[in-house]
Amino acid sequence: MSLLEGCAFVVSIIGVWLTTTRSLWNYPFSLLSVALYGALFYKAKLYADMGLQGVFACALLYGLGQWTRGRSATGDVLITRLRTYEVLFSLLAGVIAAGTLGFLLDEHTDASLPWVDSLLFSGSLVATAWAARRNIESWWMWIIVDIFYVGMYGFKHLYLLAVLYAFFVALAALGLRRWQVALARQGASEDTDRHYSSAAPGKE
Image (spheres, one colour):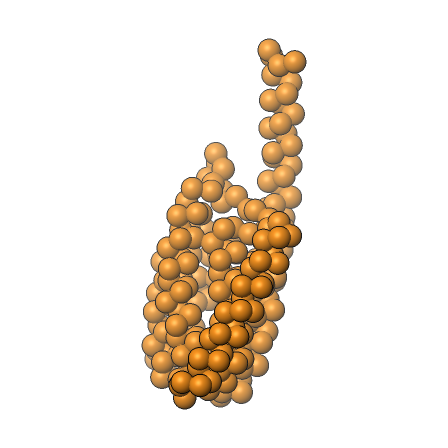
């Protein structure tokens, strides 16, 4: 295990843990982790994953703005759900991106596992976009993608990365559960607010 891989491991775990708690502090740690992994993937010739880190950085900056603005009066980050057409559109865009990138990497680079790498790249991109918008469905996508990442990194003998993504699977499951509980409370709070609003004096 290299020092670079060890630092990236620790920083990433902290970033994802903070995301499960809906803390804005996840963003500084997450930005640092993408920089560290960008360097690591370059050395491993996983170019799609390397490029993905740059996309992650842009998505994280976008997400920081979305999370900052999308908060309740008490300061909690509000959780949203995707509409069916948004899910279908996102998945279709992901498949198209995976096919295009996979072809380019396979034909024009010495990338290792270009098609698998590209498919996971696209799945990660979809999950990141959903997370930036505070969509609870992002956790389901991360669970699926991270399971496949465990297998890919094990195949590439990047064993610490494989262990890291196994942790990510567990953290994504935890994040999903925490966000489900928070969303239920959020819905109950909205129902209460609507009740008092309709019962306020002067309302017909």
